[in-house]
Image 1: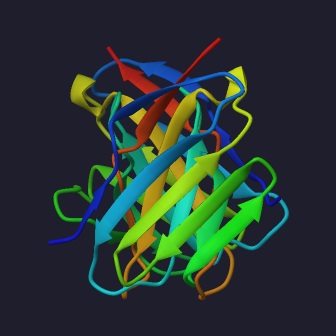
Image 2: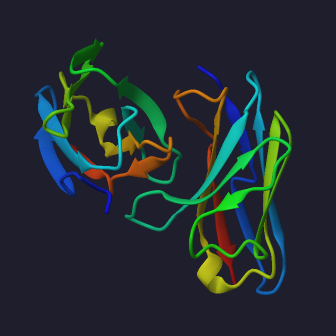
Length: 109
Length: 116
């Protein structure tokens, strides 16, 4: 079967750095997405990785290792508004998105 | 970034009635539209995939006669929940993609349906 694993919940302090991990097992691979979802709102796109390595975009970076079936989302200089759920999703060989259950990130002052 | 406008944002209806949710892509042509539902504290569950001008492809366990999807144009897709029941209460989200290649999904704002 196909599955995406990510921690259910994480807590971090304002101004700090947090890394949210995602491991996956899918039928084929056509890229990995990270989305941010605030409570009661639709997800918003953060990043897309299809090649190994680190993609940096402002305070957010995303890393991919295809051989390990592993990705992480790195958030720097955490702000209170970063409190949200972070969804990892992998596009399989049929171009279907397989979604993780999301990681709820709680930021404390 | 591209925008998908979804409405209504909130809808409350009586059991047995039908509810239509619309998604419009405002600045791109949504070749493919995905419809998701999301229960509290759970991830997105794909209900169906529709390509413009074609019948939607429903995921296993999703009743196509209950959840009617129409994607008549490249900028408009609708989901109609027919004969809604309290168990259909959920957060419904559409997302659109331009072209047939791998690319970013643009999500609508979501519609929260409550069936009394």
